[in-house]
Image (tube, rainbow, N blue to C red):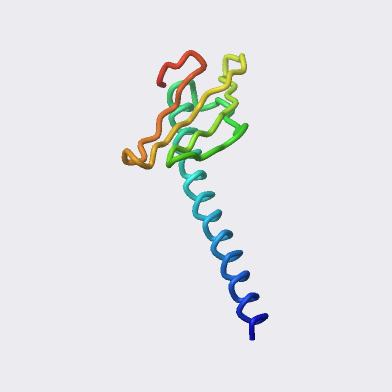
Length: 99
């Protein structure tokens, strides 16, 4: 009986952690799509936007983007969304300026 309850508990924890990651992935994916649209609107539709990294801390999700505009020249930008303040998404260039 103890073994059955341990297996049930472990299965529940694994399932919860997997579903939590799926929810994060969905939020992160939506944020990436929004950031990609912002970058393409500001720099041109032919811009190439790729994800370098993503992290979430204290409700703030930051996605580092590698951006190559149609005119050339590669740069790294940050896409930031704060769930604590309504989840507004903003893209910041390497100089700290908002697109």
